[in-house]
Amino acid sequence: MKRIILAITGASGSLYAVEFLKLMEQVDVEVDGIISEAGVKVMGLELGIAAAELPGVSRWFQIKDFTAPMASGSSRYDGMVVLPCSMGTLAAIANGMSVNLIHRAADVTLKERRPLVLAARETPLNRTHLRNMLKVHDSGASICPAMPSFYHHPASITEMARDFAGRVADQLGIKVPGLKRWG
Image 1: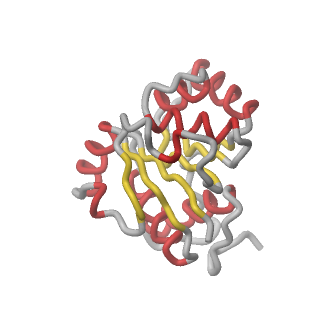
Image 2 (image 1 turned 120 degrees about the horizontal axis):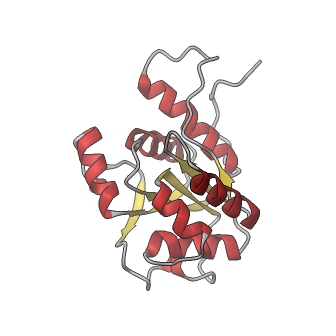
């Protein structure tokens, strides 16, 4: 069974995390979660729910808990996704600043050469954002901006979010059957 870390930050896009978790339940992937204080607030504003109400999270870890398993490379995770990823979180990861457990877990994921997917969520982008994206890319992360596709003719926002969540799963090497593909 694959085991991954899901971090949710304060960028807009909580629905992407919900749909990602539903897909992980379908393919029997164990998910440990971390959510920032801003992530809690944005999720409440966008979806009217709390993190504890999200489907498919095996365990939640506190943002300041540096004794959590994902704070050490000796813990076995198959990858990590930050979905959505704020520019502040991106900057901390790009510059090796382990201010909280999300940053530390991402740093550990990179140093252990495991997949790290950052679903950056901001527009427009300034030069600092772009430099930070290049830094994390050069460190081994995948930048997967939260950009929905339309070639599969989604019927709803939820369907667009689910399709994007499937693309994130692809980046982690997790195969989700039934996703619509090009051609």
